[in-house]
Length: 244
Image (tube, rainbow, N blue to C red; front, side, top):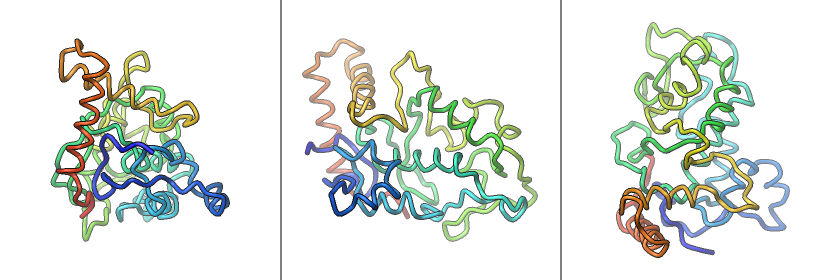
């Protein structure tokens, strides 16, 4: 198993994979399918995968924040995409270029303007547009008490399609610019993919490393070296917990 180029928080230097053994087939079929694309060369431990799939309120953040007002929980289809977002956050190893420090109440590090493929974003918004929320920018527009999020006083719960103009507005603002809506014709990240064909996000990371480091003139060798160096930096500087 290869080392990970870069990962967030306490799992940044973990050299584990999602547990795909004979004794865990039932567990896998039941709960790990969304993180399965990252089973190799990822930051996912079995415990992280369990948390992502079985905890209703990951990071003490509830997706059902409008239940008190609507008596409706988030739909399973919409929740699936937010869970995939969490899998990407915890498990995607090729993300070092977009990691920045933050003073959020629920994390000390975050992604910033990760190029998300338009097709992924469009499907996510389509799945959620009839669901309810009371906040436009989730890290900023909720009241957080002991790490838990609730609607601000006076905030109204309405459908996603009434809160956001379109899928681009949704993806770029729901997590405070963590994502950058990017046409599929340009190098962009996927939050779900067929792992049997390899992780397509690796090539995307190498493309942007190339642009950032040499203005597009670097060799494959230089790109590979920068992927390695990002991984080394993640080990040296990003080994503290990502959650507070």
